[in-house]
Amino acid sequence: MLESALKILEKIEENGFQAYIVGGFVRDYVLGIESNDVDICTSARPKDIRSIFKDACLPTDEYGSVTVILKNIRFEITTFRKEQAYSNYRHPDDVEFIDDLEEDLKRRDFLMNTLCMNRDGKVIDLLGGKEDIEKKQIRTVGDSSQKFSEDALRILRAVRFATVLGFTLTDEVKESIFKTKSLLKEISYQRKREELDRIFTSVNVKMGVSLLLELGLDHELEIFNLDKVSNFDDLIGVWTQLQVSDLYPFTNNEKDLMENIQKALSLNNLNHRVLYTYGLYVNSIAANIKGISKKDVTYQYNNLPIHSRADIVLNGDEISSILKKNPGAYLKEIFSDLEDKILSLELENEKEVLTSYIQNTYS
Image (cartoon, rainbow, N blue to C red; front, side, top):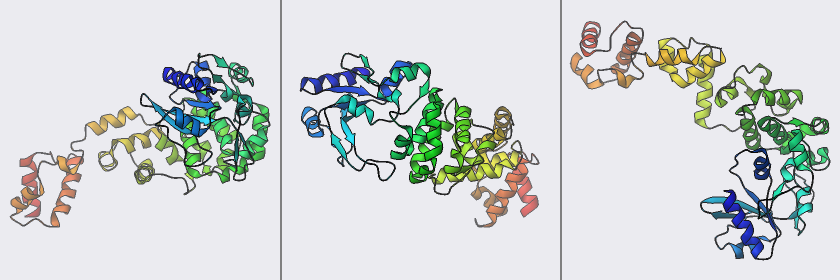
């Protein structure tokens, strides 16, 4: 990826423009972390990029990045710019294309994200980002309160970066978050969930949760009970333990899983019927939240005599034949009875045993 990105820089510069890899990729490169997201900044205007890369995809609005794909890798290329006032706490009202790299870097969020790399692979540090990386601290570019007021999502990004990288927030950043955190209500629930998902799936999740609680962001984000979450092994399991606003976006499948985990939390997750009804995943998450070993749940599940109705050795036609009846609604009651008897080990799942039971019970 780096090799391809450097070739893009070279091609842009061959056409008379400046170009640098910027942001997270360079930060991670300095930290020795593998990164799959490359952003490029350049003095070239979008129309210039289009003339250099014939298959470049121009943005649908005047603020977006130009997309270039090289060797099946997607690169976002953004023209150096100054941003005007932010009236919606998320995006600038207007941008002005410029030719000054340093001015472009000043509009960015955190100093550690202002590192650049030139076509020779040399890291360029104009604003002191390396110092922050060495100190493992997160500072904003310029006044923190202004940065968070411009784009309130930066508040969550600060916590996410601190969590994922194991960095600390400076006192100024924390104080500014306290001042501006109410602006999080202006951010879409989709974007808030994306940042929270990254925090909840980080190896440093407990540090991230501590930060969210310390800064009082749980109330601003409408994620209550965060201080009572006992297990962070599974993302859906984490969300299940929280009381959250209905406005957070979840798929129907995620909603069903969370509802079933809630139900399974009040049940015995080693019970055959419970394991059969809710399945291994739901019971494993519920058990884990309660401190019950996943290994025990998996063992019990694997040793169930049946895992679904399809595992019963008699089908509907065979039961109808045994009773000398046409298939009908009565089969549902019989199957439910067989499930209970097999799961409670009162009946073996064998044709002769089940046939005899049906004849004696339902004939």
